[in-house]
Length: 259
Length: 342
Picture (tube, rainbow over the protein chains, first blue to last red):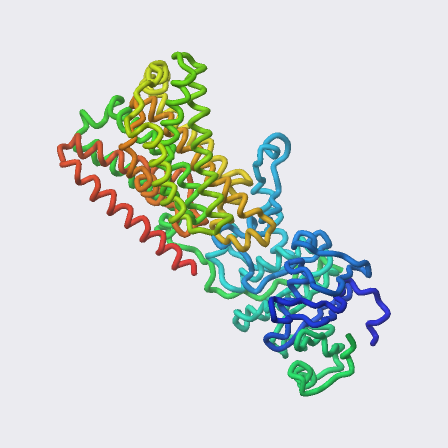
């Protein structure tokens, strides 16, 4: 309603994606506006993960259109999505646990030494560690020893490393797939604060979560996916937990069922 | 807009994470340090028991000459094991590359440097080809490294036997034996040892300081994460197995130089010896952890034990028992380290 005036940063229109006989997405729409936290919610099997992977370039849609800043785009690989400033924090975090945090931040995008050494393939670990330490400090991610392997860190710290990596490279959108699912109370609090700090930098955050209180707390908007379609959109403040759950389960039908 | 807000510290993250570790835990964690200490301890022990004959330049030369060719194999094996792989084919590839090198030198004829270089190129090339076969089948056909390299272990040796009819090639240029095989730098350090140490140093730098090395660790630590980070995991695995194959080829050429024959029957346990050395050196069979420095120590521990037992009059068979025990201890410590981190 009120959001209709602005140009969406990232938009999916009528996305269809099947795996064999399973139709994971059946004409799904999804919208992200600049600098907002939008929660993508839905029951298990609603198509959330497939939609995220499509928007991140992991899957290409069978039908439908993706738009960045209103312009149609084709994502054939995660590299294409990244080139548009879109990063994903996967549920499994996708960290190389035996490597230190800075090496993970720059995994596949290493900073090279200057001059001849760089041309010979030498990487600049010191520069990466400096930049990594700064990034952790700015995001409020506390890591005692940034020389230690990620394997030696707690779940919350690992989540922090994964989020810091996404934020370091994203300039538009960061997707976070169930970022608090495996975390304790204090760690969850930290991650939610982290989400808000990311938004402060003008980067939009898409939060995929099952945790309704958490969604209501940090999300500016909520989009509900059910059976491969978007069935409802809510603005912060105009919605109760019952309404969201009702839309997720189909108990409450909304008028948002347009294709 | 940004600065003041950022300075508000986040509440302490949980306290169960990486806290200060006791000194011994750090020693166990920094695996190449403790394994280096074990090596120093062994050398010291033998030196105390038998100072006159163990502590001599001639004996140091013996030990390091025995270890040199294995060090070249183990250097390649280190890369493979860091990717969470294994290469059982190295000894057979050594033999095959040695045979092809001898054939090439025979075909060129003569005894000069040109012939020797042709032999080297041939050995490196055919070693690299077997490495490519290993890497291709592992990365593209998704067959487990254990099975692929067990297969090529048999195939490379079989092919060497087919080509030679099972009879060792003895027509090795004398210049090769005289220089690389038995020659010494400054009249003291055997060229075999110099070459092996230079190879270890170069590949140690490659592993620790370059993007190639970083990818090697990343692939072994979490191949899926590496793939999502845009690293060409399949390509990288093929390259790593080609490194191991090419180094096995180099070892084949060094072996020709040292023994003056293709020693077809003499390398059936090279794979196990190289894996033992790599694992003793602190490289993890689960991938993602390891160093060439550790492998150097891991190569020298069995060599020092063997030599020390002979010199001190202990039955040298004890060496196998001791090496086996050290191997098991090394893997146990690796598991301890990992379980502490999980």
